[in-house]
Length: 170
Image (cartoon, rainbow, N blue to C red):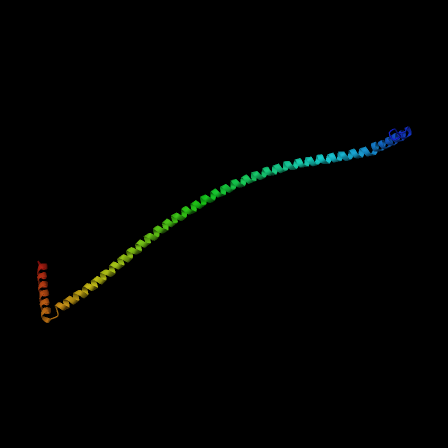
């Protein structure tokens, strides 16, 4: 039963040792522990404050990023609109230039065709005249192949000239 019921002397000395340990802890241990807990609490509070500030900064940065992205989208849309307008203007200008060039080429071709046509007509007339002269020469040679026929033609021409001369005098 001694184990369950301690003696009075033991209790006395245990109490004295407990009070000494309690006093030492009270004087030096508990303040160090509370300082460490307080420092840890301050560090955690500071870390939470910094984390909160970082979250606010991150939110601001995200908001700025979204506004920059929106502005970039608007600029992109504006640039695309300007590019489309420029492209349409260039296409319209190219089409009008192509039409003008086509009309000019068509006019040049018509003028060239007319010039070649006139040249062909002149050449055909010259060839027809030359052929007519050759045919007439052959016909006249054949008709005037004999001296009698030549004299007969000369008399006829002289008679025509004299008749015409008399008609002109009247």
